[in-house]
Image 1 (cartoon, rainbow, N blue to C red):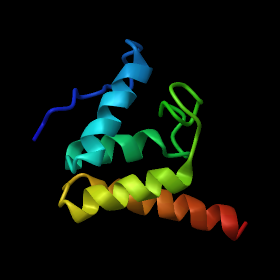
Image 2 (image 1 turned 180 degrees about the vertical axis):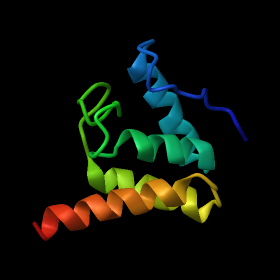
Image 3 (image 1 turned 120 degrees about the vertical axis):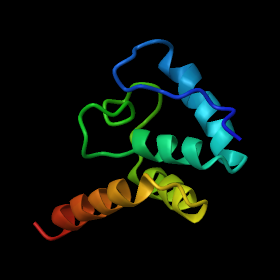
Image 4 (image 1 turned 60 degrees about the horizontal axis):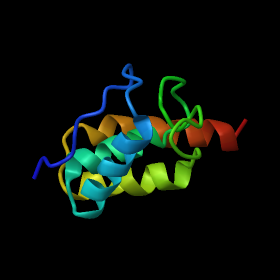
Length: 95
């Protein structure tokens, strides 16, 4: 169900449109789109779109939501990123 265009974080071409299409795919259960959307919502990586407020607002809750959805749909790339996000949150809480 790869109906969503793959977004490279180094490409500045119409980020809002790309995020919109990833959101549509994520809502339809596309694990790649769910992973990409969650990745864009992460707060720890300065290269991520949403971290810098480009395209939409930063939202760690949405990041975890979409990464969990991708995990439920067996996206094989999600575990490492989800664990990193959780580690960063733990460090922020316990500092």
